[in-house]
Image (tube, rainbow, N blue to C red; front, top):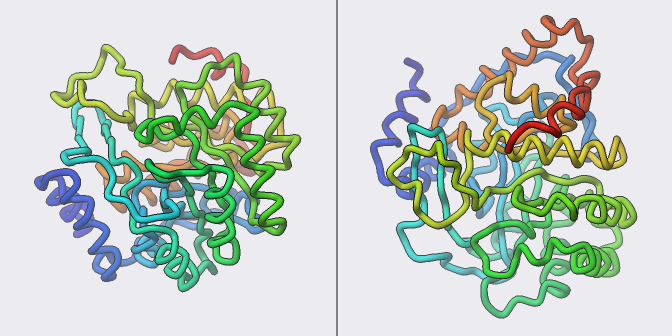
Length: 354
C-alpha cells in the first residue's frame, strides 16, 4: 500500500477533527509528498481566464485558513478552494462537530465557519504559487455582528489580487440565517454591493444549497446571469437525512456530505444547467468518489468538479484514479475531449430521484 494511503488509513483511527488538523499540518509541512497524476490534454477545461489541466478541484471546508495550499497543489488538484473565511476570526460551534458515517461514505459537520479571519488568510493566499493550481477563496459572514452588504465586499476586496476566483457562500446550514441570503433579491443586493466596491473583482461564483426550493431556481439563475456572475457551485451540504443512512452519527445536526448527497446535488446541477445553458460556468460538487460519478457531474452540466468527502476517505490516491478513469471513459464514449460531454445528459439527470 502506498505511504499516502497508509497515512490516510492511520488518520481514520483518530477523532475526525483531530485527524483533519493532523492532515492540514502534514500538508503544510510538506509531509504528504507529491502525487503523480496522469496528464491528458483531453481533460483540460477553460475556467477563470486560464486552462485547468485537470478539472477536479478540492471543495471549500478542507483548508479553511489557506494554511496548506502548497501541499494540496502538489497532490495534483487542478484547483483548490480555500475557506470558508469570515471577516473576523471565530471559533465555530462547540465540539464535537464533525462526524464520520463510514458505512455510508458520508460525513456530517456543524463546524460553523471556524477560521482565523480574513487578514491572515489573504496574506497566505498572496504568498501562494498559482502557476500550476488555480486558487479560489470561499467567503462567508460571521455568526454574530454580520452585515452582509458590508462584509462580503470587504472580503472580496481583501482577496481580489490573490485569487483566481471568489465563491460567495450563502448556503452553509451551520450559520443561522445564512441560507436566507439565497433569495434572489437579497443575493442581488450583495452582488451589487460587491461590484460597486470591487469593480475589478475576480470571477464571482455563488455556492448554493441542495435543499433550495427548485421553484426558486429560475429567478435565481436569471439574476445571476443579469449580474454577470461567472458561475454557480452546486452544491453545499444537505440537511436531509435519507432513510438509507446506517452510520451511528446519522442523527447528528449539521450538513451531510458524501455519497448520500450525490443524486440530490446532481439533479439540482442538471436543472441549473437546463436553465442557464452555457451562460454560467457550473462547478459540480457532492458525492463524487469515482470516475463514473465525476463524469455524471460533467454530463449534468458541470465544467469543473470538486471533491471533499471522498478525499477524506481515499486520500491523495483519489486524484490519479479519477484522472485515469476519466481518460478511459472518454475512450469508451469515443469523445475527443471532456468538454464535448458537458451538459449532454442534463435532461435525464434533472429527473433523477434526490
